[in-house]
Each structure stands twice: as structure tokens, then as C-alpha cells.
Length: 280
Image (tube, rainbow, N blue to C red):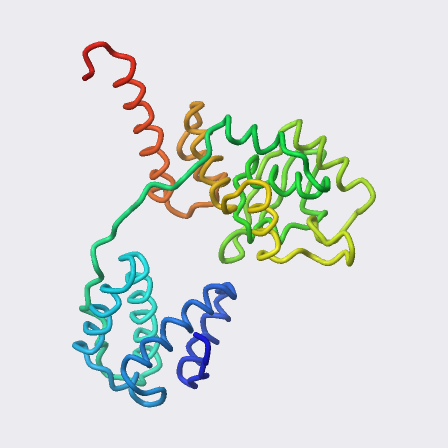
């Protein structure tokens, strides 16, 4: 929101989320959603405390006309979390958001690259070795772009061929290095023993998530998360165990990983329809 106004009760709520190790991006999303809700109510001060269930429903109905159901669901989740906080603090006696229902979830299959498309990207001429390392880590390890940005030299264990990854909510997991990527990384980190893994060649400072996105877009013409989707899809295509892929991705729930099985199932069906003489 361009003219963001700091609302004390919202700031207190965000402070609690920050103490629970919510990411800066999550905090900004919560702030935006709640400020938008307050604007809809017509007040930036006491009105959120006095909002009625029908007002919350009206806001969700209004948002549903303007945005994708997934966006509206996120905004309602923010509001529900906010009112649970108000209840916990004893600031309200009833939760007006409790029975408000979100619009039906429209689940879309994640976009991924084919193995051939991945090879074409890596056959590009890279302006510097660091840029190749960035794309290799995204695809070979299935990292989130934020996880890549946080990596340090000391997170890499060449002896065990592992990488320590700090995921969502500061949860750590271990990623495994293949021989080829290990060789590339050894050449890349040879002269730098510690500090950020992907850094500015000019200042030596850690590259921001935004800058990393720009690098990926420049070479691959897509967003970084597509490499993560491709990692999972190609692993399952080649017979990897679903729970193993869950662990490698750092998903808390197996159901989150299962969406990739829909991709592989769809491709199997397509192959069947194309190949079998009586499939059509």
C-alpha cells in the first residue's frame, strides 16, 4: 500500500509474529492485508476492534470480485489470525472472523521445465561463474530463493557432500551434493572460506532475493520457484520416493508434496493416450 499508515494494534500483532520468527515478506503481507481491511472498514484506529462478522464477510465478498480465490483466502487467513490474537490478549470477547468461510480453493498445478528446457538454460553463456552456481543450486537442490540467499560458505560440507539449508521458520534441513555440483562449488568457493555463498563481485555483500530473481529471469526467463517445481517433478519422474522428495524440499506436510504426483500422473496419462492404439 503506497501510503502505509502504522496502526498501533496491528503493529503489536506483527511484533508477536516477528518474535515467532515470521519472515519479513510474511510480515509485509500481513500488514498489507490488515491495512486494506481497515481501509475497507473506513477507519484506521478503533474500528478493527469493533468489526462485526457481516463486515468481514462484506470485505471478503468485495475482494472475491477483484482477486483470485487464493489471494482472498490468504487475506481471510490474515484476518482470522489477527482476531485470534485479539482474543488471546483479552481485547475482544467474541471472534467475529471465526465463522467466516473462505472462497473455494482453486488449486492450479505448478509450472515446471522439461529436462530438455533445463539443459538449454545451462547451455547458455553465463556472464560470470557465480550466476551459473545460482541456477545450479536452485535446480539441483530444489531450494527456495530465500534459502539460497541465506546460504553461507560454511554451510557446505564437501567431505560429506551436504549443504545445511535454513528453511521456512528457521527450520534446518540437509541437502545432498551430486558429484558434478560439488566440483563446481569447489571451484567457486576455492578462495573464500566464509561469508555469504552468493555475493556481489564488487562489494562482497550478500545478494538480495530481489537481485537473485533478476539473475534467474535474465537467463531462464522464468521465476526461481519454477526450478524448485522442476526439481520435484523430475525426481518423481525418475522414480524417487514421495517422502524423500518431501524431506528434500523441506515440506512440513506430505500433502504439499503430493501436488507433484498430479503432474507426473498427468504426463503418464498423456503418454498412454498418445501411444495406445485404443486409448482414443
